[in-house]
Image (cartoon, rainbow, N blue to C red; front, side, top):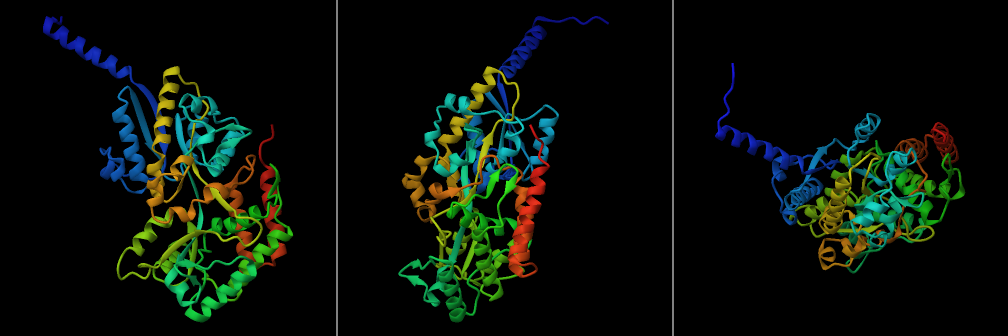
Length: 440
C-alpha cells in the first residue's frame, strides 16, 4: 500500500523534525547526588529562599539553574546515601556521571586510582579561584597539589549544650557556658555537673557510632600537631598523645559522667529531653535543636547553645569533613565542559543558601555576610572554617579505617581492653588494611 503525503502532513513532519533538532541541541550534563529525594514537595519549585532541608535546598537550586539555562539539560540521578557502590559500578562500566556529590574524605579513594579529573581548569573557566574557599574547605579538595572538587561545605562535630542544666550546675558566665580548658578541668566540670543535677555531663552516642569516638581522637591529635598517618600505608596510634586522649574518655565512662549504651537516636532523644548537659554531635543537628529551643514547653526551650569542641590540648582544632562536587574522569565535549562550568559557577554563587542546613559554607565571603551572621549560632561556630583539619591528602579508605579504630576505642573506653592494647590493635589492623591497597 502506498502512502500519499499531503503538504500539510509534510509540514507537520518538518516541525516535528525541527523540534527534535532543538531538543538535541541542548547540552546534557548528568548530575548524581545524595541528600535524599523530595520531588513531591520541591519537584517544581525554584524558590530557593523558601526551601528547607538539604534535599529541599539542593532540589530547588537545580530547578532554578535549569529554568535559567534552558540550553542545558541537567539529568539528575538521586542515589541512596552515600552512593559510592553505585558510583564505583558506573566508573567500572565506563559510564560515570559528569558531576557527583561526595564526602571530601573519600576523594582520595578515587583520585589515587586516576578515576577523578583534576578541576583546576574547569573551576578557572567558571571564574572560581581557590582563594575564594575557606581554609577548611580548601584542605578537603586539594590532593597532590591539584583541586579535585568544588567544596560545598564543611561539616564537623560541635558541643550542643543545655544551658539551663549548665546554669543549675554553676557552669555559666552570664549567657555563655563555661568551657573546660584542660582534661583535668573537664573532669572537674563533669563531676560538679553530676553533683548539682544528678545527670551526666556528656551525652554520647557510643553504640554503633565509631565515627564519634574516632572524631574525638582525631580532633585532639590534630590539636597537638600529631602525625596520624606517617605515610599512605601506616597509621600512628600507639602514642602518648593518643593514650592520654583515650584515658580521658575512659575516666568519663568509668565515673558515670557520660551516658553509656546509647546509639545516635537514643542519644538525640536524651539531649532533647534534657537528660544531660552536652551532646557532642554534628553541625547538621543545629536546625532540629534550634527548633526544640524555640518551642515553648520543651526541655531545650530558651536553653540551647552550641560551640566548637573546647581546646583541651595544644591549639584550637576541629576534625572536619565536607561535601564536594567532583568530576569522574571521562571524555566530554567542549559544550559539556562549558555547561559544567556554568553549573559550578551557579553553585558557588548559591553557597549562602546551603549554609542554612547548619553546615559551614565553603566560600569565605559567605561568612562575612549579614545573612550568615543572622542564622542561629553561626557566629559561634564560624571559627571551624579556619581551624577545621582533615587527614593527609594521601589517606585512603578513611571510612573503613574509622570503623576499625572505632571498635578498638570502644573496647578501651568500656574497659574490655587496656588502652595500650586497644591502640596497638587499632594500629596493627589499620596498617594491615592499608597494606592491601593496590600499588602503582
